[in-house]
Amino acid sequence: MLMIEGLSRRFGDKMAVSEVDLAIAPGAFIGVIGRSGAGKSTLLRMINRLQEPTSGRIVFDGQDVTALKGQALRLWRAQAAMIFQQFNLVGRLDVLTNVLMGRLSTMPAWRAFTKSWSADDRAIALSALDQFDIAPLAAQRADSLSGGQQQRVAIARALAQEPGLILADEPIASLDPRNTKIVMDALLRINKHFGITVLCNLHSLDLARTYCDRLVGMAQGRVVFDGAPEALTDDVARDLYGLEAGEVMDLDPAPAPGRAGLAIPDAALA
Image (cartoon, rainbow, N blue to C red; front, side):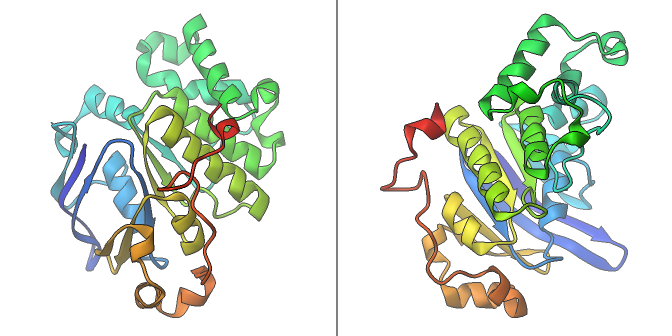
């Protein structure tokens, strides 16, 4: 269970996130929605401790994440894997090495420094690549791949961390519609097949309704909606997004794979 209690972050005079309280059950797929500047990215970065909270607490399975330091903090960042909009791969390195970077927190310092990967680490990394049908690309330079392929490598790296929680910060913002579906399907597969909790910042309300089993709507740093996708009416969405509503709303959203009454095809979970 992930508990967020009174979490706030101030940048100078601006309150980016204000008094957020959330309880997130294991295995949930949460979509964090809202207009640009609503505080979505800051919230996820605080959970991972890439940003320090000004006040409040983050508790995961009884552990106070906000109190962690040193090695304990490094282990938490492996447990709460981040996936970024811009992939954050090392372009000159091959795909397999990029995924192996997800194993650094489990290694002794000397092995991490020399990148002396164990046979087990390589097996875990290759298995993660295979989950997303990109194992044949293991020897290619990361910067030779398409955007969608690079994001799947980033997701494989996150999976190689063996996390309990994945924090995806606008993971499809720079992708075309085909690759958007591939990446969102990959996140859904991680969630349903491995039972890993996913918090995903999304700008598109249509995607959020399609893939997520719960939506958290933010405005001006505060949570203003928290509920099932079907509870987010078009009127509420218009209030949430304001002038951006026309960009993010689809008045006839697609059926949601994996939600109540609908089964994910077996091939998607194989």
